Image 1 (cartoon, helix red, strand yellow):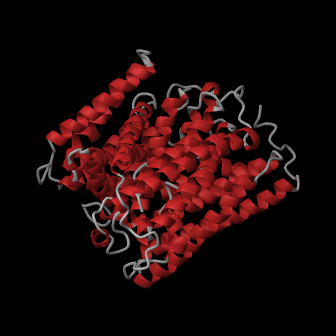
Image 2 (cartoon, rainbow, N blue to C red; image 1 turned 90 degrees about the horizontal axis):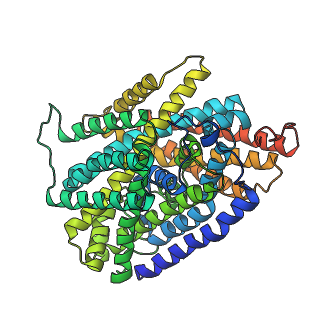
Image 3 (tube, rainbow, N blue to C red; image 1 turned 30 degrees about the vertical axis):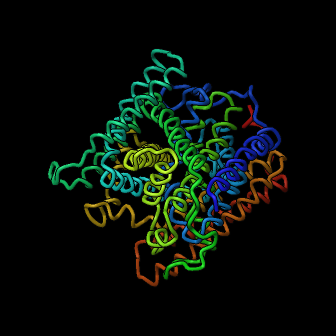
Length: 560
């Protein structure tokens, strides 16, 4: 099949979803009000709460939620064939992710920027809240540890990405000053920032950096992991406008340009998809498509992590409530576009089916490597860019996505630690909470060796936990809608599908982990399954209570 056909169908579905379905959600379901005073104005502190231009906020939100997962997941899932992955990414983005991300943003903005974990206490109850926080804590810890290892691997395998990856931090710091201190025009600031980033990419391609072994007494991989944690800790403590927000914005623009380069190469080169639509010759050991497809591709279809970003940082920067449609729903569309690009790169970037099968010789193969290698071949064939430069561009995209997600996750996990301290009547400052996060993250990452093997050991549970959290977030949105006497079905349908598939996958994983006697992951999986099931039951009771009209105060206080 011609990859251009797949690209055009996918983009048309995303465009239709944003133009039609997001308008329906915004006007009829969430009823976004331009006159509503958002937390960014009500609680403006210049650190976490700050009114932000919707395009700048979209950049922060998009790059924070995207990470490496919409590349890794589709890059692995095409082992079952390109059609199931394509269908889940497109339909999931339009009807699941957009609803979920916009809903979490709206719910938090209507409650002074409170996190989904805090809202669970209000709408599900204190027991549900405590268990909800357990799921959130474990998921964020997985994100921090695993993404540090993903970035480390990319910096080692593609040394030409080192200069642009770290140079982007300096560019972002200057962009923050240009926007907020010098009040420069946003268009001019964007042009300067993007030009600088692509200049760094060219510089990195010309001067790849491979660290000496050892460096400061550490192996290169260990050094990169430590450096990433140090950076993420510092970034999480700075006011959002200094580094986090401008970094994410300029990265978002640059990454969309990179994605545009990949799409333009498909448009010009029209490469053929060599992978089968449905793979009837999957390697031995490959799990069943159902339910694993729905948790292998999380980000790129629907992701619980998005709800944490929406309620953890983005809701605190929303200038007007109506901006939530662009920031939340179009942020999900942006990730869907990235996942679609990953599917095309991993299926049309190889010369023959035999070459493709050599890469996908076992379940778990492909991922970021297939995106960089296959995407580089697509760009070289379509636009004539040298393969090395094409790979540098795509590797830098992956690193920057993962890095922005990692530093946002550290900030969010710091919020969770402080919230948990508050529940225990123990005040925990930002510095102490950040130190706790870094120690736990480094401990998990290095728990299986100095190469960061522990960071990826927990990865098999990421997709399942992520999707369970997404369904639980939708349950909060559904309760809010029921209490407001609005149509809850746009939330209930994806909630039911995602929860059933994720819970089914978690049970399958329990059997697999018991069989291989991986007691650590088995124990974590049991905790996640019990917590998710308990929260789900509490949510169902809350929905029944809300429908029966037992919530006397409804939402009057929330709208004031």
